[in-house]
Length: 463
Image (tube, rainbow, N blue to C red; front, side):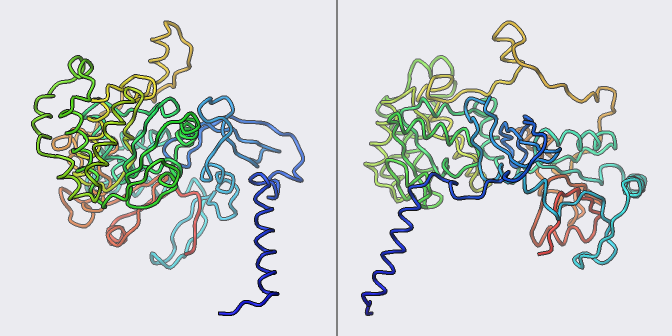
């Protein structure tokens, strides 16, 4: 390959230009999103609904139109920061393809033939079909699903009034493994005080590209203060690239390394003995269970050297209780993931970091804060008044209550809707009402051929 003097200089010029652009702050050359918009401007506080974390936001509204979204400056952990998904809420609201009126299918599914109808017609037709199905198959034959969050309660209120026990969220396809482990081990989910930690170990939790802005901000703060970050991840994620150490663990090897770390902590007596004695039960059984899960045993399964496992465990324990093993978010949706998350919580307990600065803490709602303060310092949210509404008597199709007591009954196992529609077991599902929930896949398509589907959706696409 030959390079002429002219082509070389052209390449150097392009490279220098790119370097010069790097001196500008992010977004400096981007078009101002609200440039040229004149009128009355208001700042409206709200919650982002682009994901389950629902970060506090502030919307800039000009002439009753949302033109810009940023984080709420009154939220100390986040400030005006917001992720790309949250900022794109403006596009969702103003999308020219956003569905703002009911649409009725006029042709075969998949042909894209629809017609706009009035809200009154939509209400009447949907209610008539629901009541007809209820009369023939019972109210339990209609399933209701929604993305988890504050807005799902309205749909589930309708389900209760209708008499169906089959309400579902997306949780079983997202953080269910972690949620179940947290409920079994800790009584509920825990949050991380990342900003004040001195040592953080992550198993595949990509905090720099995750969906919680506050965690990302706190991680930056912790690293600026000198905290050490260790990443066990098969891929070089952004977090891995910014961590002090990245270990390319074999996929599925996480549990083995966690068991080995637990072995080292107990074998070398690195755990917080007073915390364990006061707040836990079953320590002797745990010690016996990890007696054989040595670092050498884990190294053969996870492609992580035994000396690395020992060293990281010792360093982690030396920083306790200001040390964290990140509980993560989701991984494989399998039994092994639940065991993996349980082991993560076990390590955190051995560190004695629960309710300690730089460790883990239980999330506290307004009523708890008010109780601790001895006065009402935070407003509480009112609940829907459904006290006089009869409780559905039919068994759920996912059999959560009798078989899986640690799965939230309201969220359930949403995949069971597809199974029941295809197999007719434990009984058939004849209609499915969705809100902010988008199932895909071959089984989903096959299941929907035999049921009536009603889906409030903000945007329709043609691809």
